[in-house]
View 1 (spheres, rainbow, N blue to C red):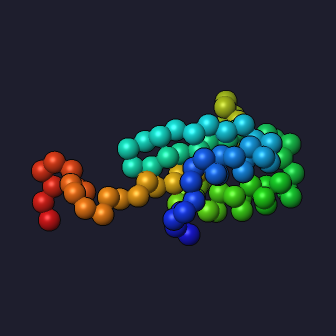
View 2 (spheres, helix red, strand yellow):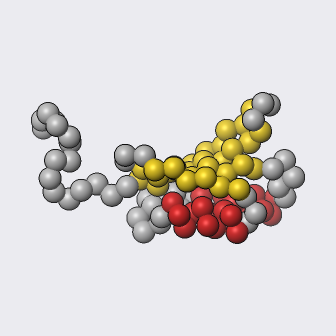
Length: 92
């Protein structure tokens, strides 16, 4: 599902409301949201978390024995309607 109308700040706020500690990072073409996922997260809460991140353009989970579990979601920034969309030197 495209994230048109969905903002990374909204995703982060909704994940925080579910009790997850979140971070938001701006990148040139997207904004990312990361949240640490505790081992004790219940199945019902997992369902709610997945409903939140389903609104993002992409999402996933990184799980390692060293750093635990980190949920991530990406919301693409709008592409300019006019101007230098491809960047310097871009040719069609």
